[in-house]
Length: 91
Ligand SMILES: [Zn+2]
Image (cartoon, rainbow, N blue to C red; front, side, top):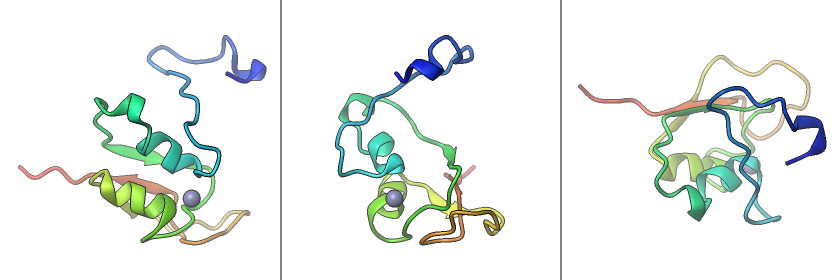
């Protein structure tokens, strides 16, 4: 864990190190074999997701989620205009 984050996690938050330096952030979480028991239902990033159908976008789709949310209008625009993703639950 980066030193600047030590002691700053909130209850229920967990530091998870990346598994592959070639992976982007979303890939490192969603493709992490140590998290295979986690059930990902939603996520958000500080920058738009890099791609819809490859890299992080593919990892999001493979986790059963989809990109969405209001179009990202901040700095660091890249790839898609989405920085939110979630899973629709059927009832
Ligand atoms: Zn990416």
